[in-house]
Image (tube, rainbow, N blue to C red; front, side, top):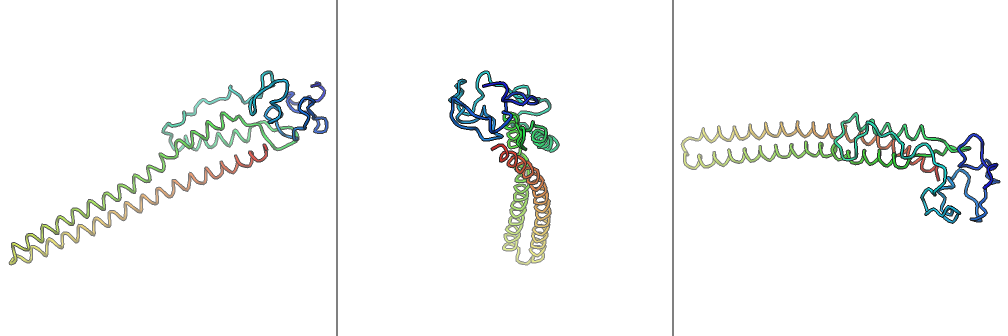
Length: 226
């Protein structure tokens, strides 16, 4: 293809005019704003590259294998809240700082780096959710243990009542102790449950807001790239 079809201010990948954009080998036009090296019918060109891959000899951008992953843990690591927020910030930065295609709002995003960051976020979300579930499970264990203790006290009191009819006061005291134990256990359980639900709600709301913002940005840029 002649060199005069390209703009002097880009890297030689994009045609200077949609009207001049044509492929003699392919026999069809690539829509304006679409990367010709990723177009489906480009596989029939002289490069012979498979669909969706960069053909040999084609120009590359500045967001390839040299992407800076320093400071980012690999997926599956137990990241702190700040690390997780940092990953989300990196996704936003990647979208905002990616190179814009000529004459459009579409950007060229490093697919490998984006998938790496999204995968890191996804792999670390279960830690936050499981922590909230653990608190709720602990709350349930406290309730069940308190009920078992209360039932034991009541049964012991009933047995003593059967053998010590004349010691009615003992039974009353035992029942009173059992009632107090149940009330204390229920109060403690309510506090633990409320604290766990509040904690879980805050954590999940924060994650939902962050992921929603990230997904909106990604979907917006994804639509613009089409």
